[in-house]
Length: 283
Figure (cartoon, rainbow, N blue to C red):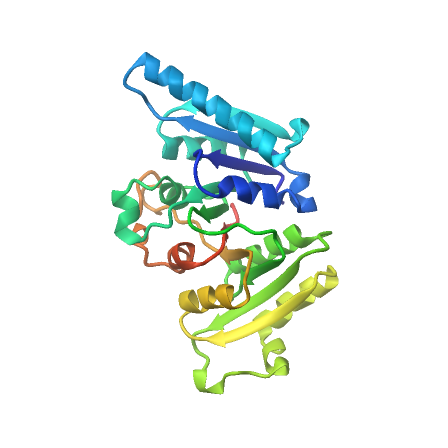
């Protein structure tokens, strides 16, 4: 399911630490990892040479620090516009997951700030793991998947189960934020929570795989509710279904409305206090 991973390195942020903790997972240990560093276009030949040498050193540093097996690693050092190059390489290697750092910019800031991660998220159909620069990356113990009735939510659950398979230190939190639930009915009993159809179906899958799990059900706005649960349960990794974001009319142009941050995935990627894996199943 995650056989080919593209790690897009910028030389900053917490994404390298995220890759390191992911290597504790047996499912990730079996994956082939491509480390990409993009050298932006330079004005002079000397500047290009300096940036090229710097990029090569960063790639070597990642391999050493993360303790990656050489047989499972490919490296790409390429010159170009970073946001376009990440999308291109993801297509070239047919990546099952892109791992990137993120500044966590909100709405218009992401556009004006020329956010690479936001651009890639908008224009790729690959799942993405975004790691904000200002969060603390921890050993993965509690993995939460946000559930609703969508196909992308089902795929997020599949990925969560895949990641925790054969991993003895992990617990799966099955979270449902129901905007139609009357807050006055909270808190619900354990029996009421576990009888929720969306949660019950997910719990049955986790049980069959022998993965420790808990079900969580609350009311309110989904974005705020998910981020509150992340905080309350000290979640180490969040998985959220995120449909293909590419515009249906012009696949090469950003969808301005969605770039402005009106979607659930935009809200969560900015506000969740943990790394966020945005799951989308490729057609």
